[in-house]
Length: 279
Image (cartoon, rainbow, N blue to C red):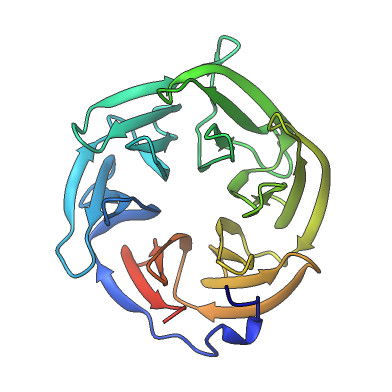
């Protein structure tokens, strides 16, 4: 394995547009079938998919309006459906939708935004809709899942957040990182053996440029989509410093990795671009 060397990051990038005609570009997720799944292809409320070198297609209808997606290795695309105020999943084989959770302690969610899987395979998601720096009512939840991936219990991991947005676990599973968009802060939490959070810290304070989706690369650098700034920023989380900033366009929302390429959703022009990072 190569040692982590930040000079391996490209000094400049040449984004290639691979998908157009997205009503609101968000939620890319790479699955084991080789496809990139994403939301709102052609119109709001859909899930699209794209195989590199092929043509995109509408793959499923959510019945709500999805935002974040993640691939569950049990064979599902898990969906943060803020329009439907729920977390759902779609079978890759049958495209059948199942609701995983739609309420916490009898109350509906505000509107889930993004999600990830923890080292146990449990689903962790942000629920920010309507929250802000003046109204910090956003939360992070953990869905403890059964072997089939459906919910056993739901736990609130943190609350009183100002639009909690993108989130990602460190590759070693020891910490959870969160983009709190309402405060423009990158936060970290320590994760215990049960998947519970503690020791919340501010890793970086950004200017007034909203943080959106986040993702780690193979060298544990954190890549951050910055909505207002129109960039993807690369951060060394060990010291809380900016390594690189790549300009992509208006309203950069999220990203995923596949075969050394970074696939980025850009809401400003309704596209997905592909960036050769580790080529």
